Image 1 (cartoon, rainbow, N blue to C red):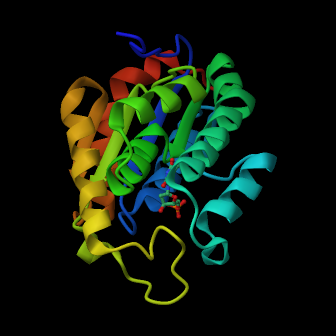
Image 2 (spheres, rainbow, N blue to C red):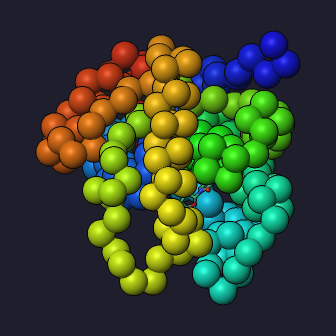
Amino acid sequence: MRFPGVYAEHGVFVCFEGGEGSGKSTQSRLLHEALTARGHRVLLTFEPGDTAVGKDVRRIVLSPETGDLDDRTEALLFAADKAEHIESMVRPALERGEVVITDRYVDSMLAYQGAGRVLDAAQLEEVARWATADLRPHLTVLLDLDPTAGFTRFEERDRMEQESVEFHQRVRSAFVALAERNPEHYLVLDARAPVEEIHEAVLARLEPLLTQAVTA
Ligand code: TMP
């Protein structure tokens, strides 16, 4: 296999994935608070847009003013955001032994650009793995939600949110298929469950991994 997956030796890399309105940001924040309270050093971050270059990428890929973009252009912009994010923020924090919590990562690209835009899955995965030097999360938490339940905002939708329900159904199925491909590194939860219940399930699953993380 060309890209077998690299798991950091130090620190703990946790990723939240899911469709629009699935509660990733809330759960990332709750996990950050809980682990910080236990004395862990934690980096809470997100894609796209948490680096200086990434901010510009985020504006281009998500602003409705951008209008139509070639699908490969869009994929490469998300890949550029990932490369910068991994090398300038995520990897250094892991090397310091910290817990890194990211709101979205490679699976979002495979789901949105691969399944949503219908780009060749194998080629796209090569690009995504190359951009991130194949660094994989120790745990990806997938908050699974029917897209028709996820849209609460009907105004000011960004470029992705403006896509059809069918697009978002393809995205959802792709997320689930990615989790099924590698269950050892995934926790799939029903996003409609109570916030506190989801949070407790994430903490319980993470517990054995935390031995790899430093405390402040
Ligand atoms: P969010 O940060 O509010 O979740 O918005 C990010 C949007 O960008 C969301 O619609 C998913 C999309 N996205 C991709 O299409 N590809 C990617 O690689 C990433 C990280 C996000």
